[in-house]
Image (cartoon, rainbow, N blue to C red; front, side, top):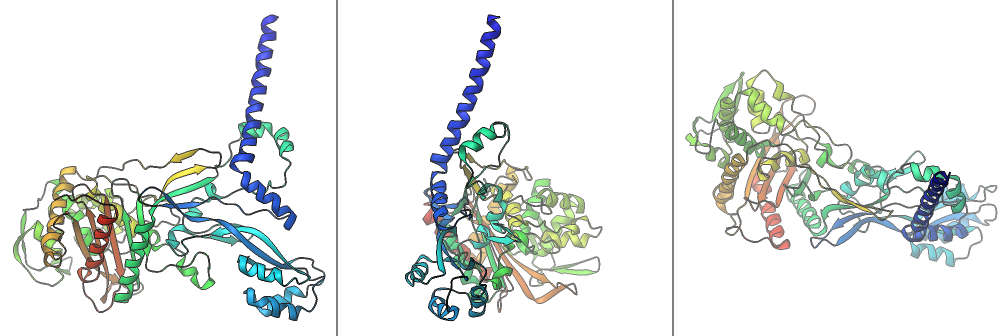
Length: 568
């Protein structure tokens, strides 16, 4: 009997302790973690009854000293509303308030004349200055309410990556970029604004203890503010100088997969969206595919070296062209160079040279290497709407498709997919996993660091070391005849110029090209891989002319900004 009594006391004590912990936890969340939010909700009740206060987690970039820059947050903004039932002289009111609002006269009058309606909103996200100006007019029937709204301190900075909020029917949520991908973390449940706290506890103890609630928090990305700003400026300069259709770039740590910067020449102000900009909201860096051209050649060379069928000194007889399956394959200038080695294939970007490598590998083995780079798969980057690469040519029965793929034609990859594949050369043959978010800090006071696991080993480390030496020689001796060689830093790089496919009738334009460029440094212990592309630049032939200077400037910026020590 005594033992039963002791057991009962212990059970009751345990239940009491659990209840006390739940109560303390709830109080902690309300008073400490969400104290400011509840305070603002309470204030709002005096201003605009039956309206929930908008709340949402933040998105942050980093500075290279590990401090943070908030890229998406909340700030006070204002709603202007009418009470048509007491509003007098709507025309006169319109004249008085129109300097401070963007609503048109017809829409204003349509709402102002609803005499049986006590509440009609006419403007949201009004600035504090304009709100105070309207308040100072003291017009009976015109009301100003304070609220919280989404605010982007960087305005157009990384706009396609950050993303935006929009309505879909009655739901206001993340629709693009990080705002959409991490909706479940950034969103806040404001439906309980007016619940009685203690009623909720006593009526939902079981739910509180046993049901798992979706985590709510803030996200920190690997995007570095200064690098992002510099990249965006350079891309705009490239696009303007060459009147290109589009220009983009990515800077990534090839070992960790952390995206340091990703940008396009076009952007939009996230604080002032316009309906005409909808076509710009998507992110071509993860959604569009392109035939990348000769920057793919180092991967072909790596496959040949890794399989043991060639090395950097292997030679072949370059006649300038060859005929495959009834089609002519030629070098960019159509010229033959006689007996040359594989270093010359990269230095002079010879199509016939990588065709030779494919012939040594065989179609299947070559195709298997490219498939192991996951060119036809999503990278898994934490952005919505990622597209798979188009590599069906690697299942062809004809040799022609494998040869064109060896120099980046006939297969189409996303920019992020291209960066991932090329990163194997900078990452000892291992395929990295690109990602943007590095940390999530939850509202309950905990945080989680996000780091990707290493990918598959595609090439042997020795293979990538040999290809890296070859690409360093390309920069030191061949690229613009060695003009961008850095005497203190080993830089590995390669250009690409690809014909653009005709979207409807098939075949390729003879006068439209995509220029691409990739490189990594310090070459033998890389911290950065840089990828650039520009679509249909005008009155210029090769990527060495359009992108080399910008690549060199970005490289020098990173060296200075991050204070990278010399490696030679």
